[in-house]
Length: 252
Image 1: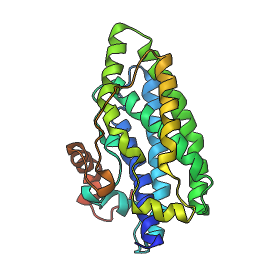
Image 2: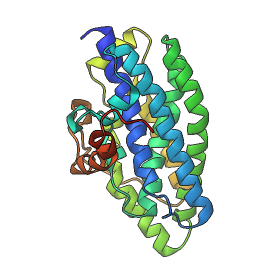
Image 3: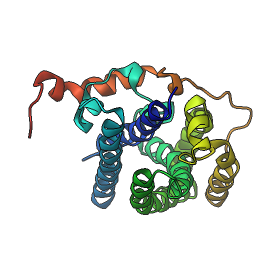
C-alpha cells in the first residue's frame, strides 16, 4: 500500500465517521425533548456533515480520479464505508443518542487535537477548524450524560442501559491497521492506541459525576476497518443516497 492509498482510506475513515454520525443526528430533527435541544441536535448534525464534506473534498483530490465529495458520499456502497459500528447505531431513544455521541465526542476531541500537529498541512487545518466544534459537542453531550444520570430513576435507567449497550462498539475506535502504520511513520496520523487511556479517563470522569458506570468484561465488536458493518448501515445509506442515485448528476 502506498502513502497516497493509505491517506485516501484514512480520510474516508474520518469523513465517514462524521457523515454517518451527522446523518443519524439529523434524524432527531423535530424529535428533541424540547425546542432548544431540537435545534442543538440539528446544528451539531450540520457541523459533523460540514466537516465530513471538507474531508471528502480532500479525499477526492488525494484519490485523483476526478470525483467530488458528493460522489464519495453518495455513490459508494456499504462495504466501501469505514465509519465505526458506533456511528451507525440507530436512535433508540434520547439517552442512546447522547451516549453514542458522548463516546464519539471524547474520542474525536483526542484524535483531532493530535491531527492539528499532522505533517499534512491540509489535514492539520481541517482538524484545527473541526476541533473548535468538537469541543462544544463534547461539552454538550457531557452535560446531558450528567443530567440524565443524576436525574430521575427513569432517566438514570435509560442512560445506563444505553451505556451498557453501546460500550461494546467503542473498542474498534482504537483499532489500527496498515493504513495507520504507514501514516504514523510519515507523521500524518496519530497513534490511536495511545489515546485509549485518556479516553477512558475522560469517560469515567463524566460517568462518575453522573453516578453511572461502564460495564465490565464487555466483548468488543470489530469489523469496520475492513468495510464490515452492522445491518443498520445499509438502511441508512439507502435513505441518505436515494436522491443522488435516483437523479444522477443533479445539482441543487
